Figure (cartoon, rainbow, N blue to C red):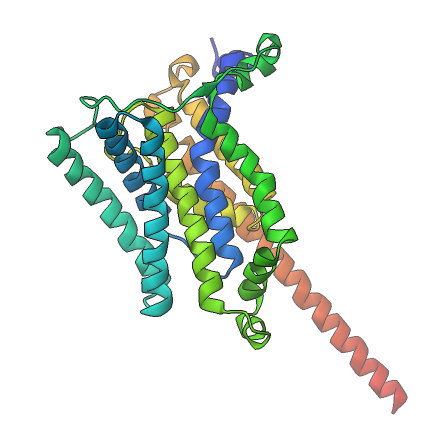
Length: 327
């Protein structure tokens, strides 16, 4: 069987689309978070570390309390605390926010691995803990519909939350006072400050929202996508979210489409055996897609900038001609 025939077989399998939607969720949530941060003029580089810490503490809280919702709240709380920490260092101590994000990623990776060993004695995963999973939602009636029912029914409650957050955050950004302040601070902080908007406070709100979304993504990874925490389980999704945000032009709807693109390649990588190609090659597809996407985005931005300069030069030339004729 050729690779194309195997690919056609995968795409005709309704279970592939269930995997496709579920693998998109841990990319979509941090991408939405990065989009919120970018709209306020900041870059949340720390999504990778936030996801790891939230995933770990969610499992620990769930295992020790016997309540998976307590674990979810713990993951959200980690996102909230990390957002406040990033805001404090970047906005009030004036540390470069990129360096703050890198530090958060390093701390998240190292601290989660160390604490996992402390709590479980295991260096790879928390499979010895009974942490539980968040509910999965079956859709009566829709479940029997071919392809659609298979793809939608049985998804985690957090998957539904992630996809519903797209219109919610669009409304927040474009229809509310907070959204207007976030966008105005991102476009021109001095103008926003001149009309009484607190720039630092607005940036803090946006960074906290961004980090909470990363915390929810971490909860999904360790309490829905998998029923345990494993070392480095974020798998670079926080960095992919940065690329997806750039390609999406920092909009929630655009973030959905770019996240679906990367989610598709993640889903495809889980079917590497059916494709008959080395698994190592297929698992690089999401990262290759990231590079290709960034190149396409950069070319598009450069093209727009070139056209803008040409239009500006043309307008200036016409202005000079008009002035010469008037003289």
